[in-house]
Image 1 (cartoon, rainbow, N blue to C red):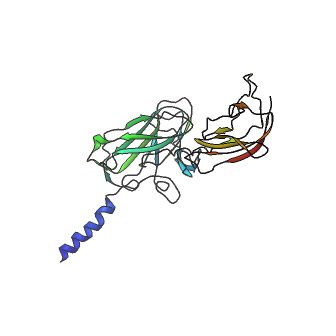
Image 2 (cartoon, rainbow, N blue to C red):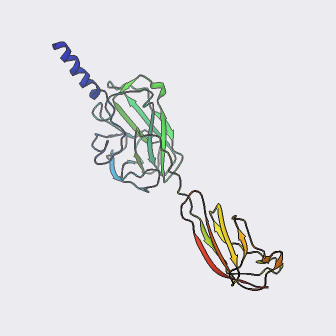
Image 3 (cartoon, one colour):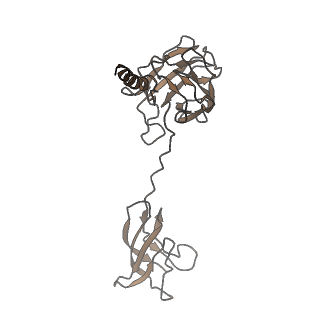
Length: 282
């Protein structure tokens, strides 16, 4: 009985001891902001700061309110960076299919390598993996493939935000370590618009000879032309339809006509409608 209780106790303790604290989002009530980030090889080693997102567009790449800020000093080494405390911060974890791809978002004003190194409890490591950012002054998610580390167990993460020699101090923001792959939010579809001209002159001079509603982002349309007496003289059912100013093959007399139209598209619900008087001039 005593042995059974011991086994149950171990089963409860082991998952908490061997677990990964992620994703690292640096939010006040999230993960990472209260960790013991140690800065190294960076001159006076200014600490990692947690600051408002420099590009917090809610529909953008990284809408997180809070991010980490690393100040890479000009006198710092190319491999200046920051590291978590062994075991206490990131936790202890083994590389497998669920975490072999480590992702991190960066916001930089220069193109340079970013490095991540995983370290064992005894400070052994296979070294850093480096990936360069391709964008500047905007967020970008970088992926680091640790497939070659499959089955290895680590308890420390080391981050190199600007792996190069530098002649001036650089500010690098980073966020969402061990996050899911970013999927861009598709832009909202454009709504159809409709405008009705109020004059046209079908006199064969090649200028304003055809009448048609002005539409944009429409994939269907329906519009009609009436005389002042209410007689329909034209009916269009496509976005490309136009009226050449004839009725039953004969030129319509000059004067005032009335147009009623509506249009729309399959991606948005608004279906604009409009009506106007049109002056047909000869």
